[in-house]
Image (cartoon, rainbow, N blue to C red):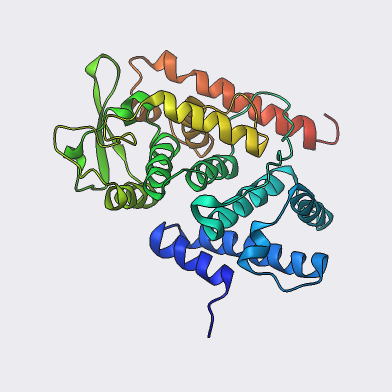
Length: 296
């Protein structure tokens, strides 16, 4: 029995890319929707060569059908990102992926990157990487920024001596100040997946994150990758690697973390540096109030 294209995609995401169950389920569902739509749209059975022949009009028609299902701009952008990853997987190195700009997510007041936006950003960057191990690397770096609150320079400064990973991570920040940050299971899994796929084994005194040729990974490469992904997803220009760290802090504060604990987690020298997040959180709450309160 021939394995279906979405099932091959599922196996690749689960076994080769080691994506989470949630991500695999969402991406495979997108592939299944795309094929079902194309079979009705084109009136023929969809094969790998058919997918290789898709053009902008086909993808635009698919997204239009999804918008008619009631999905919003961010969901549509994520759907398009998943489609690109699927087409790249099916077509291999010679895959032809139609260029189609995703819908723009409109912004009101400045606000932190939402959890959905942070995950969508990391997924898009990982799926559009030129090699699987590079995608795994970028995924791990971005999860460290959002899931552990690291500065991008701190992530680049990690060496192979952090392996094997534990429940916490010792980070050296500004002014050589060290701090301990907790590692979520998802962050640990992302780093382990990168290490498993990286062609350059981790060495105790060498950078953990490597560039394509084996040298230290440049923070500029991550910034450019984020810039490209936010354009494809229609996210605000404020969506930067450092914004992921801000979002980590703001979301913790919104969930009840006290300023002193947050100061330690972020590695701020003074409490006044941390207090800015109370203003960010207040702005976000004010935005919600103005949009939701009947008398606002």
